[in-house]
Amino acid sequence: MNVEATQTESARLRQDKDQFFRESHHSPIPESERPGFEGLSYLPYNGELIFDVELKELHDQEEVVMATSVSGEESLYRKAGYFEFEVDGTIHRLHAYRSAHEQEADRQTLFIPFRDRTSGKESYGAGRYLDLELTPSGGYILDFNLAYNPYCAYSDRYVCPLPPRENWLQVEIRAGEKDYRGRH
Image (cartoon, rainbow, N blue to C red; front, side):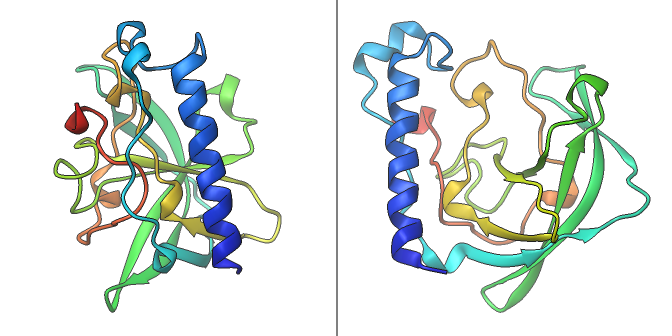
């Protein structure tokens, strides 16, 4: 893996996202905040938080009901499997999910919501997300520099699934987006 190329790609993606958030009618940033929007804040790029991992598939893909940012609402997912990776000498596990809603079931992505020890301090308190395109091989690059905030971090008009307790990491993941509200 070429860390310099990954860092360059990450910087380009961040620049594109800032432009979308500043200019698009679909931006989650409230319209009143867009004129002063200078871009999102990120934890420093960390090449040590990029992992070559294999999805440990679960053959019995149980349904999981995730609470959301709106009290009383829930989202339904299927547990696809999990990834294991090592941070600070300890093996950690994150479960990956696929939507269980019929209209979204064909999406070819894995959804990885997580919280870590930066949640509520430097990163969004409810947690962050990673999305991975499905691969036929089961091999993936888990790059925490791409960890992003759900849209409910920017505006109350969005409903976002909250990471289930099994995806609460007992380690700081010092990469990816910082808390948007914490910087204003």
